[in-house]
Image (cartoon, rainbow, N blue to C red; front, side):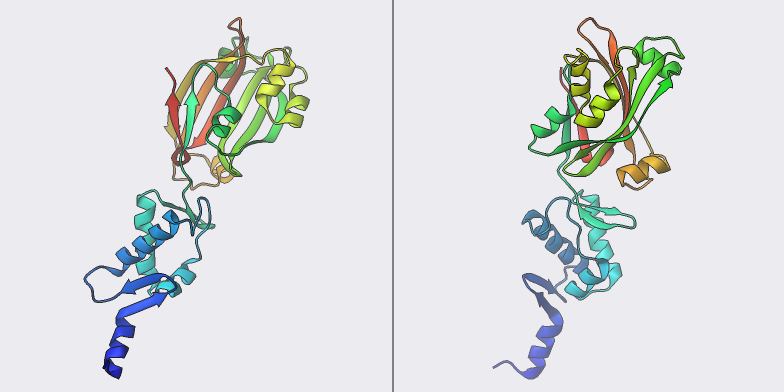
Amino acid sequence: MTTGNALEETARNLRIDGNNMIERGTGIALWRQIEQQLADDVTSGNFPEGSRLPTEPELAERFGVNRHTLRRAVSGLVEQGLLRVEQGRGTFVQENVVDYLIGKRTRFSEIITKQHRNPAGRLLRAYEIEADQSVASGLEIKPGTACILLKTINDVDERPLSVSWNYFPARRFPDLIPVYSETRSVTKALTHHGAGNYTRRRTKVTARLPDAEDAKILKQPANRPVLVVESVNVDETGKPVQFCIAHFIADRMQIVFET
């Protein structure tokens, strides 16, 4: 027969909350047990990709521990790449990394939909500018030539993946802004002007920390690097039709070069 004292001791040493079991006095650190329970919640689908976990106080109450112990468990899962912490927003389940294939034919929507994910484009700004030296070099035009700039956000599953500055020769693509505004597709806008069969000539990839505006747009911490992808697309005659500088969230994607 179990005595009252024994029952009290069991209650102290074992906390059960739904399917959660945290044991004290076993030699396994509480934060390790919480780390495993949260990992199991993610892998079982209780916390789907991209979902936000309960708040820190709620999780601390769930497991019957202080916030320091909980934070150590969460930190371990962040290091493993299972969770991410967004300052001011909470803790989220990390999505599967997007494979971004770069080859002769690089199309954002095609790349994303082939991975059974949902792509979307959002227009931040669209206006005509004079090409500076870097844009002129990319488009093989004279500095000061009129260009169209589309500043856009590319989303995957309703979360930003990249922000990009897209430059096009204004004289060749006079209707590009209204067509893109309607279709949210660079390919459709170029197709409208007879240049839809464009290919990738050059891609250059570097990494740096985002500025404050990038971090805000991409909804990521300012101390997390972005991948800077600079590219030139050309038409069938080899003439540049698009010069693009894109900043990608580094831990949401990996670039795959097709050779």
